[in-house]
Image (cartoon, rainbow, N blue to C red; front, top):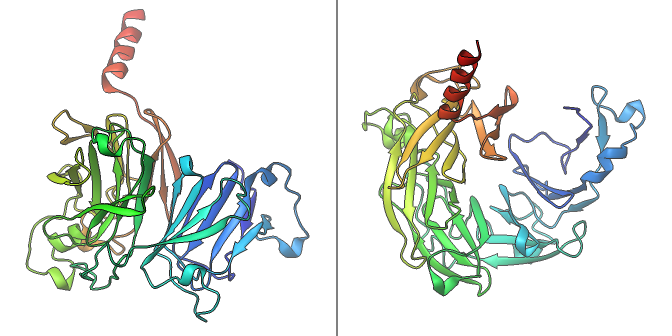
Length: 369
């Protein structure tokens, strides 16, 4: 793997958090640094990148500049791609510090900014979705954080729906995870289909819909800390905070139903962060408990298949110097190949092998010898 270049932050300051998504050959990058906007860069340039003068290099790595910089957004948390629509959604946006030239009059946390990248990926047109009146409109505060806004979206999963609810066949749907609840939004009609939550929702963080569109699996970034009594707001619960994964039946998009919560007791107490579903498997990042692979059962319950602890720095969320260290995300590129990221130890590529296939290969080798 070659480090081709370093793309500077919009305001040239370091950021603890960045997110990026790719549409075609173009990458869209956001950060939670004030006035960092959205950076847009054509990745095909990396094939013919010419190193600049030494004064622009960082440790012998080229400093590259974005092809476009959208400065009408102050900062934001995440990027959600909707490839079929040719759209990039900027979620959790905040206005600029100077409160001038804001895209679509961005209100703190209430807006999803939509970049239409289909016709001009480098210079997209901008529109916005106002969710303040339809998502967490009661302004409920997350149990652990006491910090939320009506309409704030933390993450999402968008797709063209072809599931069992025939009323929405062929519709463009986004599932928005929004700290205190989850919303299913119809992008075609511009309306919220349903909102729902679960008991003791602490920080509804991220989730993914299965390929058959029947189930949503989601994680809560701070329920494990609450369960372990780690946070002052949740003291006295006194139980191990093993990673939890929440399952919801969405066969009826208008009436989603909670199925169950899978508690991974084979992992040591740790926070979960991101998960993705492909085929009959869930690929989950569980911070200090590492990268995990779960099998989706016919009952839609989960069974742990494999794991790799990237950092191995602590074995209990309460005693971690940094409970948010370890595996940040775990993304599958196929049913046998996944990648996990870690803020301290870089990227890890995993080959996932079915145990039955592996045993057969071992038996064949024994037979040959």
